[in-house]
Length: 558
Image 1 (cartoon, rainbow, N blue to C red):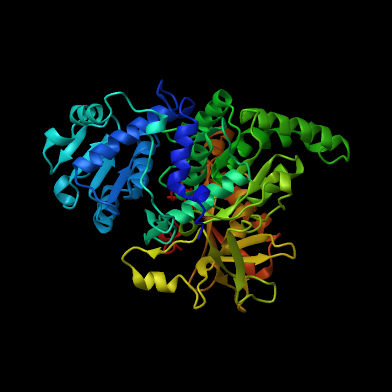
Image 2 (tube, rainbow, N blue to C red; image 1 turned 180 degrees about the vertical axis):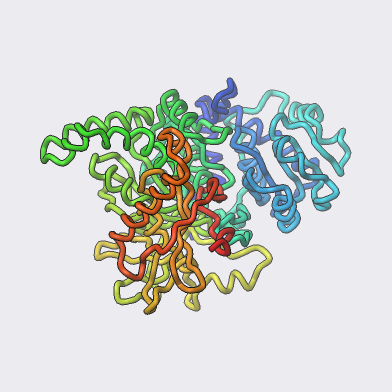
């Protein structure tokens, strides 16, 4: 447990507000809304007054649901600095799922965007005293006296409490130890069963501490925040770490298409970029693949020394596309396509892959690009913070990854059996991932324990590795490898219909193309890994917010 005051999470933000009062803290990208640290601190103080008027006590739960914006940030920080527990809800959750989380957590206040509120009624969430708009702070629905908590009433109480104004020296948050609970994050994994991860302030502090000590962010740093803040990855590093260090985060509230993001990168020129693989893979496919497939370039790439000139030009083009001023790009949340990673490594693109999970708030392993991250690994365990071991390894050293350290959760909320099942007898957290460690301590993830398939003679088959090969085939957008009852493997493939239409390909020609792709992939696989059938799927697979396919929805489709 990190007990030193400099690692106390609440005190980190108290110091940051005092030291960075006049610096920009958050910008709602695409609008004229920018808040300095001082203005954000004032909003937090007003929210503390609101919480008190609503009778919120220490360790009460406060839920927040909506797209990234400065009000979302204020609610999160106001909650943990007040002594309450924040319950972030992903904005893409359906209304029924949101209602379940609000009720299961026992949240007493709900801050929600107007569009997310449309499917919810106050009588469906009986414990909630008030629902407040994240758009403009107006009360949406109340079980309390509306005269007590409307904007004007809170403004009047604020003015009465601070008649001379609220300044840097006035920022003081009550003492709160890192052993206390900071948040309950409901997972949105690929298994279809959402659990409430009880995250202590210590786990959040461990991530923030690492991010600052590794210089991932710093005073004056610029972040383009497009990962959902309700997810642990974006929350930890584009928000919590950034604001603890005195950085400036530009909050993208729109769906992060490559077009929108490239425009934001060009304008903001971020100093670091956090992304999930899907975003980088789409940009690679649209920007890089067409270039390297042209005959002159494809020929030169095969010639020693000459290829370095081409690689250098491609790297510079890609770096400029992301704003030109970032030190490195960090990829996490899902496996990166090996072909994409291999090419980016070849051109020396400043990129590192990390590994984590919501249950570790989220980071477990990472090695910065400048420190020599290894291709296809996800780095080493965070030094002094996390430990990793491989349980029950096979002959190749592959087994379940188990972890322990500062960033681990307390358990699952109101679910003692799931909590018990998630830890080994000697107290290590089971990740559910298969991996191996090399002689230097770098971790390599091979797949999920639950998705691993068995070949005809008991061989281990990792579908994610096969899918990565399929996804590199022409006209393939994404794929899933599933196993039939007769043990034959089936590839469920969603074609890239934009490319198909542009080529003028007929349905019969598309089927022929997919059959050629199957044969090509099989030529690179062992006999027990062979794809027997390719089935076309008409649209993109449903995904979690970190862009992992929800596999459980498709297991009965073969």
